[in-house]
Image 1 (cartoon, rainbow, N blue to C red):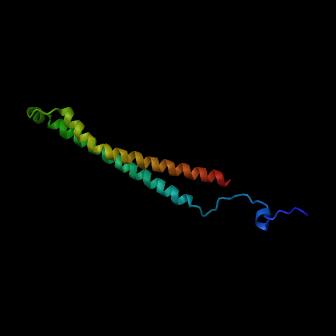
Image 2 (image 1 turned 90 degrees about the vertical axis):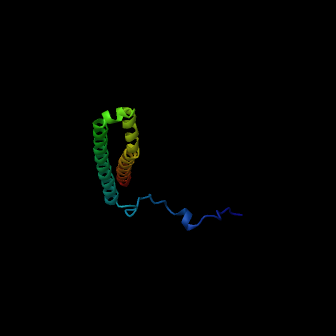
Image 3 (image 1 turned 60 degrees about the vertical axis):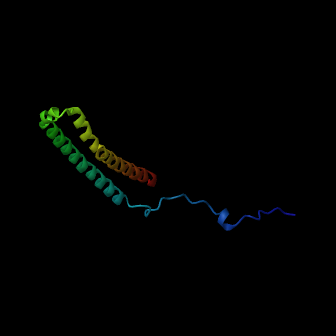
Length: 114
């Protein structure tokens, strides 16, 4: 009785072809464009945050004598106003992180295509 591999089919015995990342996986230009947009949005939000910090600081320092007459501390007022900017600062960090991640992703894909 001859032993034959009953599971051998042309699909399983064919030569393995090297895996290749398809060019249609994603368009690196679109990914880099999104990274650029994310970076621009982050910079615009950062400028708005800095303008807001400046305005709030000016407003509180200008009205410090009035606040002191009412028994309020200038530091308490500054802290209360600055806490409102925490979410905007986090938005800047997230958008910069997205841009950085997308640029790394494109670099990795370009290196694997070679």
